[in-house]
Length: 282
Image (cartoon, rainbow, N blue to C red; front, side):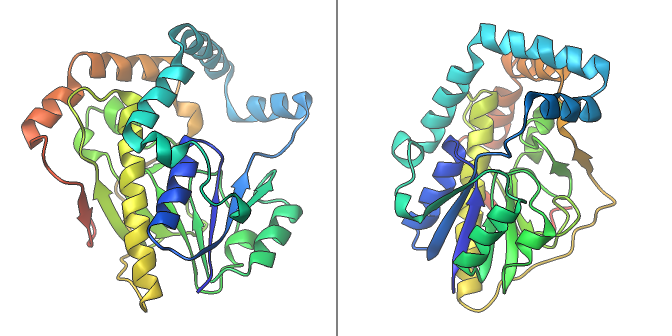
C-alpha cells in the first residue's frame, strides 16, 4: 500500500514525517507545501476579505508584541524541547520530499498524482481540496491537533486554553471531507502536560499525540481496516483564524501565567499517559 504525506516545512511538519518513517509506515512521498506564491497586492486583498478593520489593527498590534517578546524563538525552543531536536530539524529522508507552492494548484495535483497514493495523509497545511484528496485510492486522512467534534478548525490547541478547558486539548485522526475537520473519526487522544508547559509546548504535545494516532490508524489500515465513527457536529465549534486576535492572545498568556496548566496537571496526575480513544468522545 502506497502512503503519501502532505504537510508543511516547519518543526512540527518535519517531526510528523520523521515519526511516520521511524515507525515503519511505508511513505513513498512527502509533499511539502511552501504556500502559494502571491503578489503583495493579492496578499492585501486576501487579508481584506478575511478580516475586519478592527481585526487587522489587532493583528498588527499582536505582531508587534510577538516581535518584542521574541515569540518566534520562544515557540521554536518550546517545540524543540517537546518534540526532540533530532526529530524536527530536518527531514530524515530528503529523497522522498517533493516541494510545491500551493497544495491545490495544478502543479501540486500532478506531483501527488505521480506518487499514486493508496492512502493520503494530511498534516498542518491549509485546506486540501477534493481534487487532491480524491487521488487517494483507499482514503485521505487528516491529523487535526484538536479534539473533534468539540474543537474544529484553526488553532485548536489554543482555544481550549482560552476557554479554560485544558481537559479538551487533544488530537483527532479523521477522514478528509468537504466539512472542515468533520469527517468520520478513526481515533482521538489527549496529551500529557507538564506543570511548566507554556502555550507553544502545549501545541507540541498535541502534535505528539497526533503522530501517535496516525501511526496506529495507518497500521490498522495496512492490516485490513480500522474502526471509525461519525461525528456529531451539533456539539462543539469551528474556529477560524480571524478569531485569534490580540485580546484572545493576552487572555491565554494571562491564564497560563496564573497557573491554568499547573493546576490541571496537579488535578490529573503528572504521570498519566497519553489517552487514546476508540469511540466518540462526546
